[in-house]
Image: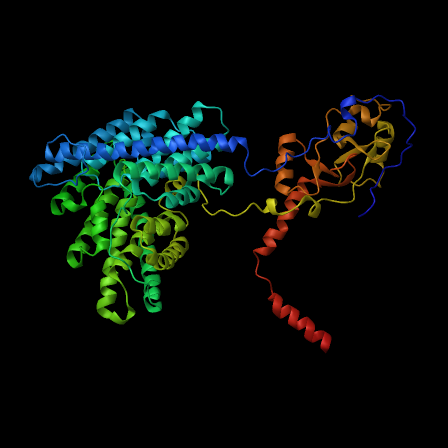
Length: 625
């Protein structure tokens, strides 16, 4: 370590000058970064609140399901019942076209005069609130979002209930976070807890719900955020089991371990479905753009989309409503051939046209229907052309169902685990991982944004949903701090220091200087501006102009802790001191040192001119030669 540089001074020149007692050099006076703790008492409190949020979200999810059933029964069957039923055109005949149109009119009025934020499938709006509004969602959303979704779906809208439930659960978590004293980060955790609980209560998929929250809402993976979300999701699944049972959502025949050729086929299948996911995303937003060109208020757009929904519903009533039974029939092998192809095409047209109009409804169930159908068709094709591959149509449908969501949402792990949890078929995990990974790869290669983030990107708020460990968290201060520190003595006068700075020998790269006492302990830090401030006379000792306790950092701190400490203290540099009293200065860390540390990260992302092993081999051969 280089010795510290000092400007010339006489240590006894101003020995009688006063100094504020609060600036004496002890560890109690320095302002250091707080010690890192992965969890604390606050996490315990937030976890308990999240459990309450999860319980309430599960009840809301159950209530919304019954509300959809009530509206469906009233609109299509003319009866008062909350049991979940699929829409049918048998009773109303051609008049059934008017049912989704009436629902669309009500939703449009609710959006215009209630809250425009209820438009769409909900998850992009929640993501936007997390990133740009400190996770604050209006209480109106918690009421209007599920009600509008229930009306849209109950009157035949080809949507799933999961998107609105996720949005509603998130709104409830946000509302709780706005009623109690929490930080913005803790409010985000409660929002994600409500959203994950809503999904878990809908599908009985607690792990997938947590993964979805991590991949789409939390934008981080930390114990203090994941633990409350996981507890909320687990409790919501328990409530669901109490209310509706604990069986798998989709029942399919037992699956067998896939052979290697079959696994390769599932990889190809996942890639094809991933490409279709990009196509579906682009189609939805292309349709949205077409609606934007219409010379009428957006309140009326859902009615136009509902006309298409109603007409298609007359052609195939299975396209109406949530369609969870269709998904089970597809992966169970009940729909095949032309019947399956017709369902895929009509469901996709109905869903994309209606969703593009800005009505309220989820995307998961329609995507699962279309993706599962494509997978089943490709599986049938593979078994007829190359039966030796050993492709199972049930597995192919399952891979297609999960792969389209992985490609459309860019939530890879959530897609894989969701398909497993909703079917409870462990032998499907390997094909799911292979197919979804390929779909995710090709979807990212072909389109930067997902169906969730494209809307935000078009609003000028692009989101990057790839998360890495903070590089500054992996670098210690001792590896980045400058060791050649120019320090000042507390007894030096401003006259001699100003003269010293005027000399040509002054190190112009230094803008701040630690001030030490006679024993070398830190008193504080002054900047060039402080030393040249005309309000201080030449006879003033530098220790007398110290106005606050010094902000310091220790060698074992990370650069992230140091950077946060700089922001909190409002300084541009931090003396590096020993932790033991008296605190001795061993270096200094500036903002430029923080930026320079990123050079290692950028170098790691570059392809070297010569592979390390080849370089080492050449050196060894050169020494032998």
